[in-house]
Structures are given as structure tokens and as C-alpha cells.
Image 1: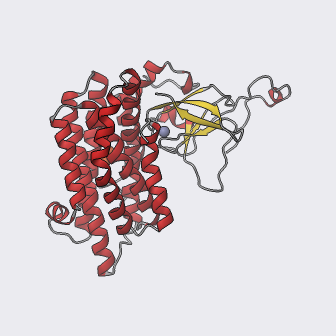
Image 2: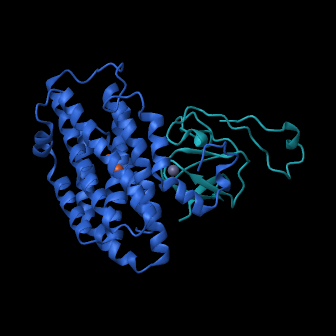
Image 3: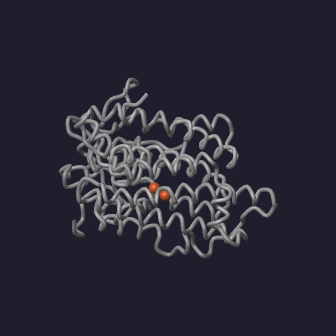
Length: 260
Length: 99
Ligand SMILES: [Fe+2]
Ligand SMILES: [Fe+2]
Ligand SMILES: [Zn+2]
């Protein structure tokens, strides 16, 4: 869209706005703002004040293991979705999401290595919760079944809203390096949850019958999600009232789309 | 936050919308030319200005160079949402997603 100063961004035509925010160009100049000057998701000078006690350290490694499997699911999901995306804009956007998810997986594995894990990928697979692994399996089944709406719903609405809520809660109390890594991931995830919700919102508006199918998908995945939320809250030490807040944050996007 | 008014004398009649001069506030999640239209919510002590609304999807503060009125359209670039400003039950303005 060029580099000329923008007087009022809210005056853009909707079509023009969608073209802009789905573009590789927009993504590139967005991530440049918060990733340049970082190494594996954090600034070199940030003091590594990670938990020194063995129990807390193991706890953090388990939490990161779950994040890695979530990111792996999102990476495989987003890349598979490119083939079934309905148009060029969504294909290009998903290519940027694939890059984001690959980065997330890489920085999280790297963080595990920082914490003394010799084979982080294997360790992540060993430690991650059963529910999360099952979710990954279900998500890939939807992608392979070429069900665009259901797969976007499972990945960009359900999985990513949960990640977004959990990462935000974790970042608040995390050690400085983990916090910086999570803060960067959260900025990327904003695009992913927004893409999912808006893409589905538009499609549900145009084809209301899709709703019944998605309600079924939600029913199948809900227990896995709530188990994941329960596990994650415990691992990151979320207080009970804060846990309810996390669940609400996850449910809000689902409810905005009209699922109660 | 309260942005400086573009022309303070416009406040007089109030049939006109107030206009604001937007400056960047350190928000780094969109390309440089769009940064002044967004800022981070600074927590419980923070307040929205008459030209600001919170994005319900991603919780970023969206800013406009105009005072917001019900029916206005806003774009949240950080999460790619189109929003519309509505008056909520308690009389305050809020942004709702408009797919
Ligand atoms: Fe991710
Ligand atoms: Fe994501
Ligand atoms: Zn937003």
C-alpha cells in the first residue's frame, strides 16, 4: 500500500483493508517492528532469571513441552490449510501464519535447550498432555478431510484462543526471557485469532447452514480444550478465579460467532 | 489517554466532532505508518479517550483522529477485525465486531 502517511486508517474501504492485512507485505513490516534485534525471540541483554529450583524448572519444561506440541499442531494445520484455502488472500495470509508457527516452535524448543534439555523435540513429545496430542490428531483429520470451515474453527478459533489466553496469563508471571518470548508469540497470535474469527464470521453470515456442522465440531473438541485449559492453568500456577477468566476469554470468541 | 485536540476552538459548539492529533505511543505490531492508530491497554489505571475503543477480539486500544460516535467503523489491524462503535447499556461507547 506504499509508504505515504495515513490520515485516517478507519476510512479505508473494507476490501482494501482486507487486502492490506492479509498481505505478506503487511506481515513483514509488522513482525519487523517487534522481532528485529531479538535472538530466538528475546533480546540478548535480557537477564536469564529462569527458575533455579529443580521442581520449578521441571515445571516450566513441562509447560513449554505442551506449548511446543500446540505450536507443532498449528504449524502442520496452517500449512495443510493452504491447499484448501478458498482464495489467494487467505493462501497468502496462511503462508505468513506458517512462518509464525514455525518460529514459535523453534523459539520454544530453543528455550527448552536453554533450560538444560538435551533433546527438546523428543522431550516435548514425551511430556505433552494426552488431550493436546489428541487435539492435534483431530485437527489434522479435519485438514485432511478438506473441511475449510471446520479446520479453521478448530485451529484459529478454538486452539488459538486458548493459546492466546494461556500465553497472556503465563507471560504476566514468567521469568524475563520466557516473558519476552511469549510476548512476541502473543503479538503473532493476535493476527491468527482475528483471521479465524473474521473469516468464519463472514462465512457463517453467507452460509448459515455451516453452523450446524461447526457446532458438532465444537462438541467433539470441547472436552479436550477444557482439559487442556485445566492442565495449563495448573502448570502455570493460575489462581482459581483467574482460571475462570481464562475460560471466559476462550469462550468469548466462540460466543461472538454465535455458539453458546 | 487524551490526545491533543487538533483545533481547540472546535470544542465550543460540540455539533462538530472533536479532532485529535495522534502520535505514536510505542505500539510496534503493525507497519510503521499505521502505528499511531493503536496502543497497548495499560491496565486498571488506564482510561479510554473520546477517540479510543478497545478491540474485543485482541484487547488492543484502537485510536481515531476523530471523536467516536455510535455507528462509526473502526479497523483493528493487529487482529484484522472490522468493528462498529455502539452505545452500550451504561451509556458508554464500545466496539463490536462486524464480520
Ligand atoms: Fe503459534
Ligand atoms: Fe497461531
Ligand atoms: Zn483487535
